[in-house]
Length: 115
Image (cartoon, rainbow, N blue to C red):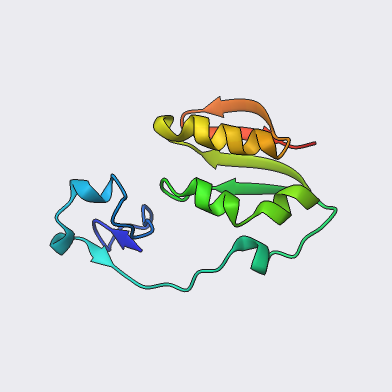
């Protein structure tokens, strides 16, 4: 994970050399830390429930959705997801494949449901 200032309480992102945002900064002046990660489907064993999910992962929303495929298929989900403009079509297309319907947008936050 990386952030421009370790005193920030938010804004951490997955360190990925291809991240466009990362290229804006001098790599020697950013703060990096290691964290344990796992696919959501390996952690969240939920079925036949009505649940709310919020995803705000600084440009890595598609990766999170990929790791939650079983959760998305096996539950009724109300979803709030932050989507940057240049990523909208990819994320919307993914969600449509999983029967999600667009509900509303407030800034970069989009709201969907699959029931």
